[in-house]
Length: 304
Image (tube, rainbow, N blue to C red; front, side):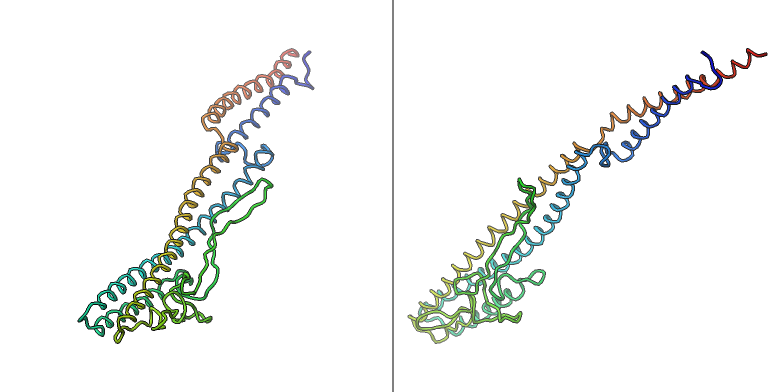
């Protein structure tokens, strides 16, 4: 039936055109944003998972920065400890030289005194971001070592603890005075030792020592060297762990990016093909609507 009030063909063509336009709008949005799930209405489940994973990835980025800061502190402390070990090795060699008959101990002491001043210089300068891990007050210090989301969906930041100990066999070259300064009477190099000489490595003066005292001095320096080596090894192990964690965080971040992409990224090859098809369908729908609208003009010719 032909009617001038209701154009069924035009209504059908218009409905088709609207559907195609809606599909084009959705496809163009995916093409412009690169995402097939850009908001919750696109796919609530995938959007929720992707949003959580993105927040975790941002946290991992912050952890990576914290790991870099922690690595810098540890590397600074290790560099200072390693340099101090070299100086104490040199001091040990000087003591061995001084035990020989006919050697002027006063002259050797002049060299030892310079080495002692170098040890203090190293201890004072081995600080990063206001923290000195080889000279200062005894305490427990921590560095960030990871970010974890457990099976119960609870998140936490993991840390590694390093103890700053100012004992003779501790990890600090010199202890602190409680006010931010250095106390040269505590720590591995500042604590007095020896049954007869009763002095520290930092205060050692062999100018008038006899054979027994020289033996004690050599033993004192050797014990200090052992303690410093142990502290250096611990710093080295922490540094290695941080490096491994940095590598893992980088790999984990890449994995999360890849996982998020699988959930929300649009397949651009597929979307470009769909867009091309929709553009063709839109042109045909417009042509169909034009034909349907022209049917009313045909009716006029019946009344001429």
